[in-house]
Length: 142
Image (cartoon, rainbow, N blue to C red; front, side, top):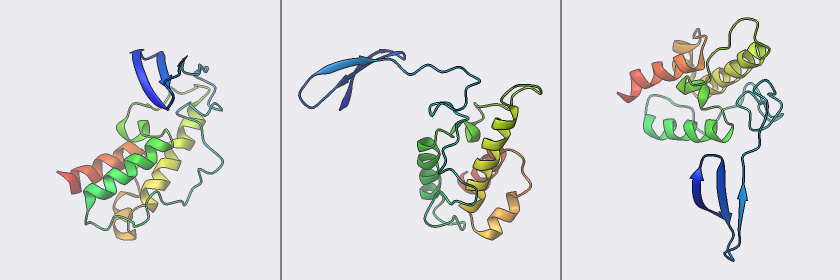
């Protein structure tokens, strides 16, 4: 299937190989319902601490390739917002504050496990995934 006419973010037309089309709307979920797979705070059972998102840990060489592979892996897990800062730490008392911290810690774990031990040690005390990401970008990208 390919995506056809997108007239608004909430109206997508899908076209199959035979030219048949169907409209779909994104699945709606309550902002506090992080059990929905489309929610940015959703954690799939296969999302575990200790996993590495890339085959070869970043060792200070080929940053561009490593960077792209991490972006793809985080995108597939709907966790890009934790490194670009758009999923902000919720206010104290929010019903999702613990789940947000859990997801942030998970992304930190994925990032540090995708680095060599030496590079990982240099960012291990960062409390936010986005801070690690920005530190690595400043040091290796620009």
